[in-house]
Every structure is written in structure tokens, then in C-alpha cells.
Image (cartoon, rainbow, N blue to C red; front, side, top):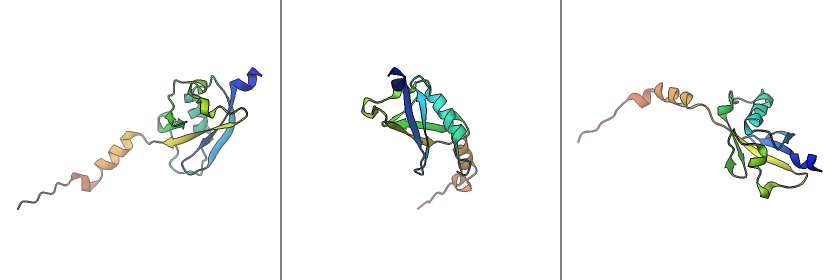
Length: 117
């Protein structure tokens, strides 16, 4: 009976409403390992997919999960349904350098407009 408690069925909901999984994970699995799994299973046809673990944010029960935590530590008592599937939301956040590069290359950002009356 304890084997079933140590295993959790998790599916990952992407921003467009599609899912990866469900797949069974041990309660001792780290959030970083979950993110690695998402990277490996990311649908190739989807644009702007994550490139590194830092690009992926996992949200469960309204909380952003930290890489060093385990699935068991992140489990909410409200979501603990025997035999149920836990849904974690996946948010892709591009690295800040890409945003900064886009802003630096934008000619509108480099102009200063002054009006003297």
C-alpha cells in the first residue's frame, strides 16, 4: 500500500491547454527532474519551447515550485486525491538577456523627444 502513496501521477498543462503526461513520479523526485522531463518531452512542433531548466516554471496549487524541493514536499493536502492525477502548470519564461537585447536593438528606445513651449 505504501508503494502507491510514494508514486504520484502528474500531468503538465502547457500554456495552450495541451498536456504532457500523465506520468508516474516518485514523491522523492526533485522539481528539477520534473523540469528535465518536460524538456525531454516538449512537443517539437511547438514554437518557443524551453531551452534550459531556467526557462521553465512549474506551478502547483498556486505556488511556483523550487528546483531543490521534492514532489512530496510540494504536494498540497487539497490536491491529495487517492488515485487522482495532479496537474502542474508549465510557464515558459525566456532568459532576461533576450528581452534586453530586443529592447537595445529597438530604435524607438534610443530616441529622446523633448517639447519646449
